[in-house]
Amino acid sequence: MYELLALFAGFVFVYSLTAGGLARTPISGAIVFTLFGWLIGPTALDLLNFAATAEGLRSLAELTLALVLFTDAANADLAVLRRSIGLPQRLLLLGLPLTILLGIAAGVLLFDQLSLLEIAILATMLAPTDAALGAAVIADKRVPANIRQGLNVESGLNDGICVPILLVLLAFASETPQELNSTQLAMSLIVRELGIGVVTGAGLSVLATLLIRFSDRRGWMTHTWRQLPVVALALGSFALAQMLHGSGFIAAFVAGLMFGSMAKRHKSALLLAAEGTGETLGLVTWVIFGALILGRMTEVESWAAVGYACLSLTLIRMLPVYLALTGSGLTSNEKLFSGWFGPRGLASIVFGVIVLAEDLPHGNVLVQTTVITVVASIFCHGLSANPLVSALVTRLTRRKRS
Image (tube, rainbow, N blue to C red; front, side, top):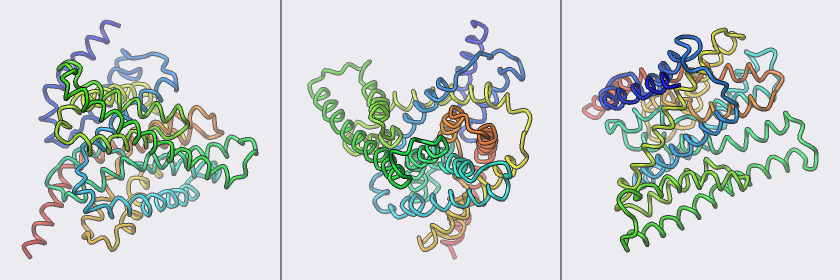
């Protein structure tokens, strides 16, 4: 244990010293973390080899995702968002449903052994994007602000929207008792997940922000404890919504939006601990993913999974986005750019763990396809971020000059 702890501490220390330099290269943090996890995992050095339960992995990934959603939402520039609200609306209301439908169509063509319901589950698992893996694009000021904010809001909300859809599909697959008919069951889950998430996140955030202001004006918060209330707010919003059978992801994102709009003056200082905690949990999640999940996916059970992963990152994502953004005022290059940068990450991992626990007839195929897609996304989107941003900026500059 101490050998592993020393190695892990050394890795974190070295990465902390070089993170800024790596951010200017095509190598993303997720690539480094995943490769380090694979290196110390059972298939390489075999230093990290313990029985991780599905529930443990799910809890870790969920908490990480909740913190990332909160901080992304809190850091959103609402002034820019108000001017460009049409982009996330198009991506969520048109692009997301089209992505799921196109994913189902591709699955029907590629997978002979999967039922239509299982294909729909797979398409939903791989529909949400990951703002953390797209951070190199979202944080790059060279990218037009409306595109950055649109992709950020889309990543923050699409996983929360996909949660009730996935739960409905899993309920059908698990042969839920027929107290409700299909339509009633679907509407009940969707309204409950979204409604409870929004109300819980907004209500708790408003109350917490007012209390933070009250305490701050009276000098009750010490420097040591100043940043921790925001971490507690992010995790508390997620946990309370989940406890009430709502969407914790929607709650965390809405809580972040409310906090960011109400705590403008001291927002950056208060968010430091939440951002650091989210980065730390993300590091641990990707290391475990690389060691215990990637390391065990050495044999591809279905080459259709590889084909689906390739389509998921290209046609299944890019065509719906292109169609959804038609008429938005964006150029073809900007629409293709927005379609390509839809990385798959924590949300898909969480969904994969949920599906794995359901013990579906072909659950292993669904999970393997998800893992292949996430791994491909980590490398493809990570390595292409800086070059494609530079290419987009160059083309936009030329267009303005002409």
